[in-house]
Length: 269
Image (cartoon, rainbow, N blue to C red; front, side, top):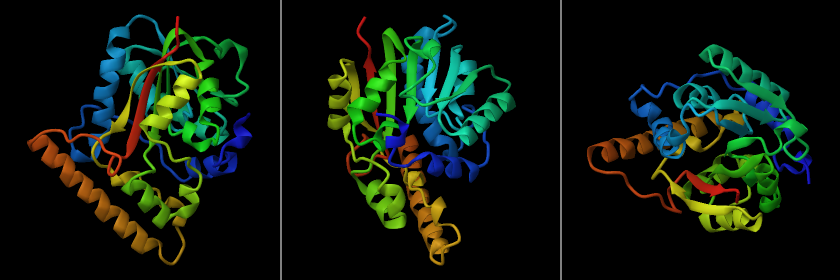
C-alpha cells in the first residue's frame, strides 16, 4: 500500500492547500470563533503536559499548513516534525513555523515509504484527517505506528461522516464526501487494535461544529452562494451550542452531531 491509494489523491491536496491562507493558532484567544482550537488544546494538555521540556519528539503526519506544529513546540516544549506528500502543503507548513518563530522539521515524503531516520523515532504521533482516506484503515495506521518508539502514543483525529456533518457534506459537496471512509469509534479502535496498538480511548469529540463541512471546491458554481450561506448559518448554530456550553456545561459527543472521532493508543514497549 502507498499514498497513491489515498481516495483524495495528491492533486486534490495540492489544490486544497493552495486555496487556503496561512493562519496562526492563539490559545489565548477566548472568542467563540476559536472554541474548537481551545477544545483540542485542552485535549492535548491532558495527553502531552507530562512530557513538557523532556526533549520528546512529536510527528504530525498530514502536516500541510499545520497550525499545530508551532503550538506543540512552543506550548508543550516538544521537538516537532511534520510529514506530508503535498509539496504545496509542506511549503505552507514551513511558512507557518517561520511566521510563529518556532523550530521544526518538515519532510515531504510518502508515509508508506518514509526516510529511514524517521522510523521508530517519535514519542508522539498525531494525524488530523488522514487514515479515513484509505480503504484499508489498518494498513494506514500500521504505517503511522512505524514512526513510534516503543511506548509511544498515537493520537488519531478523523471527521465524523456518520452523522449530520457527513450528511451535510454529502449534500453540499458529494466529491469531498466520497473521499472519506465512514468510521466511528468502534471501527477506528478496531483498526488500531489490529495493528497491535493498545487503545486507551476512542470516542466522538465535541458536541457540534458544522464549520467542518467543506464547500470550498464549489467556488465558481452557480449554487455556491447558497451553499456558503447555509454553511455559515449552520456554523452559527454550532456557535450557539458552544455559548450555551460555556454558560451551562459541556455536552457529550455523539454519533449524530459530533464533528470528530478521536482515538488515543500506545505502541507496546
